[in-house]
Amino acid sequence: MPTKYLLDEERIIRFVAWGKLRKDEDDNVLGVLPDAFALRDGEQSLSVTWCEYFAGAADEQLRCAVEAIRGSMKVSTKSRFAVGEVVRVRACAEGRPNARRLRIVHDPQVNNAAHASLINWPKDDWQLLELLAESEWSQLLTGTDADLLPVTACPAGPRSE
Amino acid sequence: MNALALFNQSRTITDLRQAGAQQGTGGPASRSLTDIFEAIRTSQRVTKPAGMARKLSTLSGEADLEIALKGSRTSFKVLVSRVSMHLGVSWLEKLFAQIDSLLDVDEWDASDPVPNTETARTFIRLLLAMKVSRRPGLGVSNSGNIVAAWTAGPNRLTVECLPNDRVRWVLARVTDGETERAAGDGKIERLREILGPYTPAVWFEYAD
Image 1 (cartoon, rainbow over the protein chains, first blue to last red):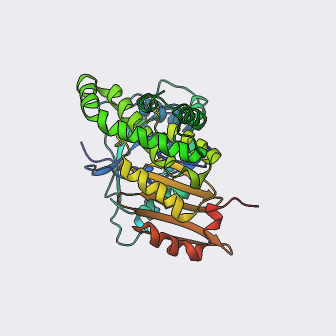
Image 2 (cartoon, rainbow over the protein chains, first blue to last red):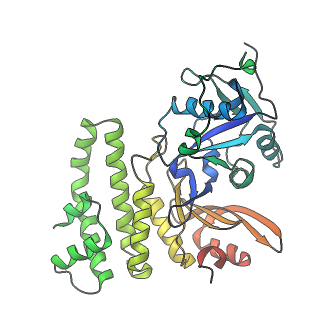
Image 3 (cartoon, rainbow over the protein chains, first blue to last red):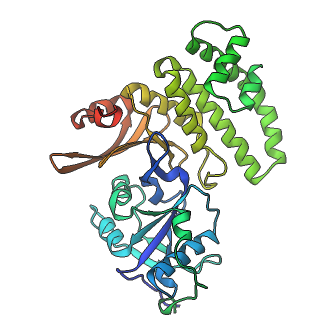
């Protein structure tokens, strides 16, 4: 199967656990910590879910991507989903000194057909990760927010083929 | 109530102070807490290996994680309590609540290593060295290190607490409409000097 690259105008979602959320001293969520976007030991690429894999309107695709994450891992009540645009994430990552060209590819998994991988993701650039967390990949959805999005059967869309 | 019972239960500062009084430790509250937690620490050192190893061998998955997180919460609180005289009881109670929240098994990402005492020790030394009035928000890195985050609008300071009093930090500071960014790593003592030009009071003190 040929490699399918995500387009600049498409969106990706990353699950953010409670421990990776930026909070104030009273545990109010303010955003995301840099480590929400950091590779773990042994990881070669950053895992995300591709919204436009699914058919439908933008909100429907977003809901389907959240459901795909929910179906593939434990999603706790205080966690969030960080939504990013490919073009902004790419510009941020590739704008760093000595950056490599980012490859964002569809990489379906058994439990998440909409899974995508960010290849050549920097291993240890906390300043980049903080920049993403602060601005370029900072739109957060709560579980409740996601539940308010329209529900569909989540059929695969034309881009998935 | 003995020290081992305290180790096995999540307690508020008030509970711990009362327990200290029952043990006849007397003295100021902070002194009592120190004594109590020293006893807990000793007890933990003696009883943990055999008992904990047996438990871990017979349980799996979430149960193991719950035990590990409980141990981490307790160790963290013990360390914090040893410097309680510098922090104040109210401050400490709120910090304990943050620790409980961060290390809650229901919210914990099983991919993350459970924080050990080394990162907790660095975190506490960071609080003391920076002379913070304002508690940070708490998080955890992929390596299982405590992450302390201070946020004042667009001014953000994030510090990962590594073993041996080392920290990794990143900041964004807005001055005259310009955002300055910096990042680095090193010993806690150096961080204080490095943050100086950024007027760290914006993070560490409450606005008037």
